[in-house]
Amino acid sequence: MNPALLDLSGYIKFFIGLFALVNPIGIIPVFISMTSYQVPAARNKTNLTANLSVAIILWTSLFLGDGILHIFGISIDSFRIAGGILVVTIAMSMISGKLGEDKQNKQEKSETAIRESIGVVPLALPLMAGPGAISSTIVWSTRYHSWQNLLGFSVAIALFAFSCWVLFRAAPLMVRVLGQTGINVITRIMGLLLMALGIEFVVTGMRTLFPGLAA
Image 1 (cartoon, rainbow, N blue to C red):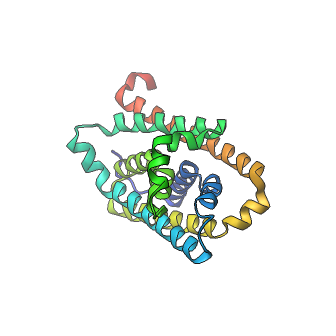
Image 2 (image 1 turned 60 degrees about the horizontal axis):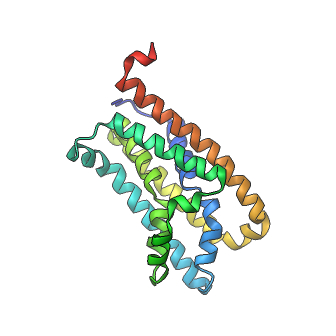
């Protein structure tokens, strides 16, 4: 593990990676449809609940994820490769326009449809803070594990949750301005960025587990 301190560009890279993984712009139509029956005050409350839940889930992954890996005897490089493969899979779904099918299956949809509160499930988990975002956060925290880096990651997560909250507050306007075509284009661009990030995770893990590959 590399204890070196990250500079600002490292935290920006972490933030952009979260943004690409979660793709809040692509989730806006889902948010609109799920809250269409709510009055504006209730929709705003759902928005706040969802993004607070996302921040809590990612902070938990940031500080406890490494310990969970040790409990199960999983090396960070193996987890990095698995996380990278998962990220690439999500990215391919984004590019092909099948993201929703991967993040939430039909059974999960039927189970959560009858629940009164949708802020935590399914919006926060699994639509936003899904396995990809959680695994990415654990990978970053175990690679740069000093308290200064963890503090920087915590701030980045808070800013990310705040950005998602702002986007969802402007959801009705953004849907009218961008249209479904514009949202689809942005989703595919995010998918390309995410695929590059996932491949980087896999390559880094492979180089550590198989040093001969770097020769």
